[in-house]
Length: 194
Image 1: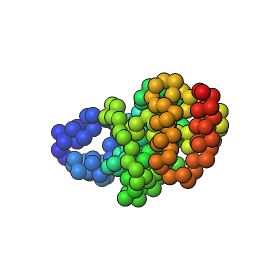
Image 2: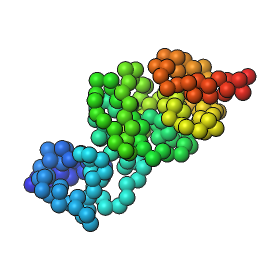
Image 3: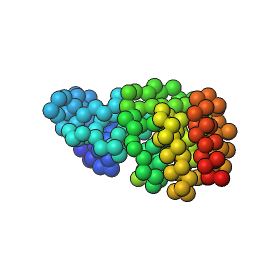
Image 4: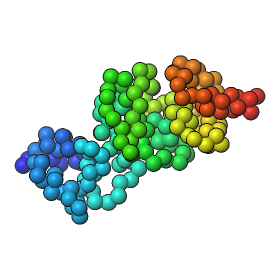
Protein backbone atom coordinates (compact mmCIF):
# COMPACT_ATOMS: atom_id res chain seq x y z
CA UNK A 1 0.00 0.00 0.00
CA UNK A 2 1.24 3.50 -0.84
CA UNK A 3 1.09 5.25 2.56
CA UNK A 4 2.15 8.61 1.08
CA UNK A 5 -1.01 8.83 -1.05
CA UNK A 6 -3.22 7.70 1.84
CA UNK A 7 -1.76 10.38 4.09
CA UNK A 8 -2.49 13.03 1.43
CA UNK A 9 -6.17 12.00 1.33
CA UNK A 10 -6.58 12.12 5.12
CA UNK A 11 -4.23 14.99 6.01
CA UNK A 12 -6.65 17.87 5.44
CA UNK A 13 -9.68 16.35 7.13
CA UNK A 14 -10.69 13.41 9.24
CA UNK A 15 -13.69 12.76 6.98
CA UNK A 16 -13.14 10.73 3.83
CA UNK A 17 -15.18 8.99 1.17
CA UNK A 18 -14.58 5.27 0.97
CA UNK A 19 -14.05 5.60 -2.80
CA UNK A 20 -11.29 8.18 -2.26
CA UNK A 21 -9.48 5.96 0.25
CA UNK A 22 -9.64 3.02 -2.16
CA UNK A 23 -8.39 5.24 -5.01
CA UNK A 24 -5.49 6.26 -2.75
CA UNK A 25 -4.57 2.59 -2.33
CA UNK A 26 -6.28 1.61 0.93
CA UNK A 27 -7.62 -1.94 0.41
CA UNK A 28 -11.31 -2.54 1.09
CA UNK A 29 -10.57 -5.14 3.76
CA UNK A 30 -8.44 -2.62 5.69
CA UNK A 31 -11.31 -0.11 5.62
CA UNK A 32 -13.73 -2.80 6.85
CA UNK A 33 -11.34 -3.84 9.61
CA UNK A 34 -10.84 -0.27 10.83
CA UNK A 35 -14.61 0.39 10.83
CA UNK A 36 -15.48 -2.58 13.05
CA UNK A 37 -16.91 -1.83 16.52
CA UNK A 38 -14.07 -0.62 18.71
CA UNK A 39 -11.93 0.21 15.65
CA UNK A 40 -10.25 3.55 14.98
CA UNK A 41 -12.69 4.61 12.21
CA UNK A 42 -16.46 4.73 11.84
CA UNK A 43 -19.04 5.01 9.08
CA UNK A 44 -20.75 8.36 9.46
CA UNK A 45 -22.90 8.25 6.27
CA UNK A 46 -23.19 5.73 3.42
CA UNK A 47 -19.81 5.72 1.67
CA UNK A 48 -18.36 8.33 4.07
CA UNK A 49 -16.05 7.60 7.00
CA UNK A 50 -14.93 9.48 10.06
CA UNK A 51 -11.29 8.59 10.59
CA UNK A 52 -11.68 8.74 14.35
CA UNK A 53 -13.44 6.72 17.02
CA UNK A 54 -14.67 9.89 18.75
CA UNK A 55 -18.25 11.16 18.28
CA UNK A 56 -18.36 13.49 15.25
CA UNK A 57 -18.35 17.25 15.78
CA UNK A 58 -20.82 19.45 13.93
CA UNK A 59 -18.05 20.51 11.52
CA UNK A 60 -17.29 16.86 10.78
CA UNK A 61 -20.99 16.18 10.19
CA UNK A 62 -21.08 19.08 7.72
CA UNK A 63 -18.01 17.80 5.87
CA UNK A 64 -19.47 14.29 5.77
CA UNK A 65 -22.80 15.57 4.40
CA UNK A 66 -21.07 17.50 1.61
CA UNK A 67 -18.93 14.46 0.76
CA UNK A 68 -22.05 12.27 0.72
CA UNK A 69 -24.12 14.67 -1.41
CA UNK A 70 -21.41 15.13 -4.01
CA UNK A 71 -20.52 17.91 -6.47
CA UNK A 72 -22.70 20.99 -6.49
CA UNK A 73 -24.21 20.41 -3.04
CA UNK A 74 -24.42 23.46 -0.78
CA UNK A 75 -25.16 23.63 2.96
CA UNK A 76 -28.17 25.79 3.77
CA UNK A 77 -30.47 26.62 6.67
CA UNK A 78 -29.30 27.03 10.26
CA UNK A 79 -25.78 25.75 9.59
CA UNK A 80 -25.27 28.28 6.78
CA UNK A 81 -26.52 31.06 9.03
CA UNK A 82 -24.22 30.01 11.87
CA UNK A 83 -21.25 29.96 9.47
CA UNK A 84 -22.05 33.54 8.50
CA UNK A 85 -22.27 34.87 12.04
CA UNK A 86 -25.91 34.44 13.05
CA UNK A 87 -26.21 32.25 16.13
CA UNK A 88 -28.56 29.43 15.23
CA UNK A 89 -29.55 26.27 17.03
CA UNK A 90 -28.22 23.42 14.86
CA UNK A 91 -30.96 21.02 13.79
CA UNK A 92 -30.65 17.25 14.12
CA UNK A 93 -29.94 16.97 10.41
CA UNK A 94 -27.74 18.80 7.91
CA UNK A 95 -29.77 20.57 5.22
CA UNK A 96 -28.25 20.74 1.74
CA UNK A 97 -29.37 21.93 -1.65
CA UNK A 98 -28.32 19.92 -4.68
CA UNK A 99 -28.65 20.61 -8.40
CA UNK A 100 -31.97 19.50 -9.90
CA UNK A 101 -30.09 17.05 -12.13
CA UNK A 102 -28.81 15.07 -9.10
CA UNK A 103 -30.91 12.27 -7.66
CA UNK A 104 -29.05 11.53 -4.43
CA UNK A 105 -31.43 10.49 -1.62
CA UNK A 106 -31.24 11.99 1.86
CA UNK A 107 -30.71 10.04 5.06
CA UNK A 108 -32.09 10.52 8.59
CA UNK A 109 -29.16 12.91 9.23
CA UNK A 110 -29.04 14.62 5.83
CA UNK A 111 -31.92 16.47 4.17
CA UNK A 112 -31.25 16.88 0.45
CA UNK A 113 -33.42 19.18 -1.63
CA UNK A 114 -33.10 19.54 -5.36
CA UNK A 115 -33.19 23.05 -6.77
CA UNK A 116 -33.34 24.46 -10.27
CA UNK A 117 -32.24 27.83 -8.85
CA UNK A 118 -28.66 27.40 -7.64
CA UNK A 119 -27.97 29.73 -4.72
CA UNK A 120 -25.11 32.13 -4.30
CA UNK A 121 -22.31 30.35 -2.45
CA UNK A 122 -20.15 31.56 0.42
CA UNK A 123 -17.15 29.36 1.27
CA UNK A 124 -16.08 29.11 4.92
CA UNK A 125 -13.40 26.70 6.14
CA UNK A 126 -13.51 24.94 2.77
CA UNK A 127 -17.26 24.26 2.97
CA UNK A 128 -19.90 25.69 0.59
CA UNK A 129 -22.77 27.55 2.27
CA UNK A 130 -25.74 29.31 0.69
CA UNK A 131 -25.72 33.09 0.84
CA UNK A 132 -27.63 34.50 3.84
CA UNK A 133 -30.96 35.36 2.19
CA UNK A 134 -31.48 31.85 0.84
CA UNK A 135 -30.21 30.29 4.10
CA UNK A 136 -32.73 32.32 6.13
CA UNK A 137 -35.66 31.27 3.96
CA UNK A 138 -34.59 27.61 3.91
CA UNK A 139 -34.24 27.65 7.69
CA UNK A 140 -37.62 29.31 8.23
CA UNK A 141 -39.35 27.01 5.75
CA UNK A 142 -38.31 23.99 7.85
CA UNK A 143 -39.10 25.57 11.23
CA UNK A 144 -42.39 24.29 12.67
CA UNK A 145 -42.70 26.90 15.44
CA UNK A 146 -43.99 30.39 14.49
CA UNK A 147 -42.04 32.23 17.18
CA UNK A 148 -38.76 30.63 16.06
CA UNK A 149 -39.56 31.52 12.43
CA UNK A 150 -39.97 35.14 13.50
CA UNK A 151 -36.72 35.08 15.51
CA UNK A 152 -34.72 33.73 12.56
CA UNK A 153 -36.13 36.33 10.16
CA UNK A 154 -35.77 39.23 12.61
CA UNK A 155 -32.31 38.13 13.73
CA UNK A 156 -30.99 38.00 10.17
CA UNK A 157 -32.40 41.43 9.35
CA UNK A 158 -31.08 42.96 12.61
CA UNK A 159 -27.65 41.41 12.01
CA UNK A 160 -27.53 43.04 8.56
CA UNK A 161 -27.29 39.72 6.71
CA UNK A 162 -30.27 40.67 4.53
CA UNK A 163 -33.25 43.00 4.35
CA UNK A 164 -36.99 42.34 4.32
CA UNK A 165 -36.93 43.37 0.66
CA UNK A 166 -34.15 40.83 -0.10
CA UNK A 167 -36.14 38.09 1.63
CA UNK A 168 -39.34 39.02 -0.19
CA UNK A 169 -37.62 39.08 -3.60
CA UNK A 170 -35.97 35.70 -2.98
CA UNK A 171 -39.25 34.21 -1.81
CA UNK A 172 -41.07 35.47 -4.90
CA UNK A 173 -38.37 34.13 -7.23
CA UNK A 174 -38.71 30.57 -5.91
CA UNK A 175 -41.43 27.97 -5.84
CA UNK A 176 -44.56 28.82 -3.86
CA UNK A 177 -44.91 25.24 -2.63
CA UNK A 178 -44.52 24.96 1.14
CA UNK A 179 -43.99 28.69 1.71
CA UNK A 180 -47.32 29.83 3.21
CA UNK A 181 -46.02 29.94 6.80
CA UNK A 182 -42.81 31.67 5.67
CA UNK A 183 -44.79 34.28 3.72
CA UNK A 184 -46.99 34.92 6.74
CA UNK A 185 -43.97 35.30 9.06
CA UNK A 186 -42.31 37.68 6.59
CA UNK A 187 -45.46 39.84 6.33
CA UNK A 188 -45.61 40.00 10.14
CA UNK A 189 -41.94 41.03 10.32
CA UNK A 190 -42.43 43.72 7.65
CA UNK A 191 -45.43 45.11 9.57
CA UNK A 192 -43.45 45.10 12.83
CA UNK A 193 -40.57 47.02 11.29
CA UNK A 194 -42.78 49.74 9.77
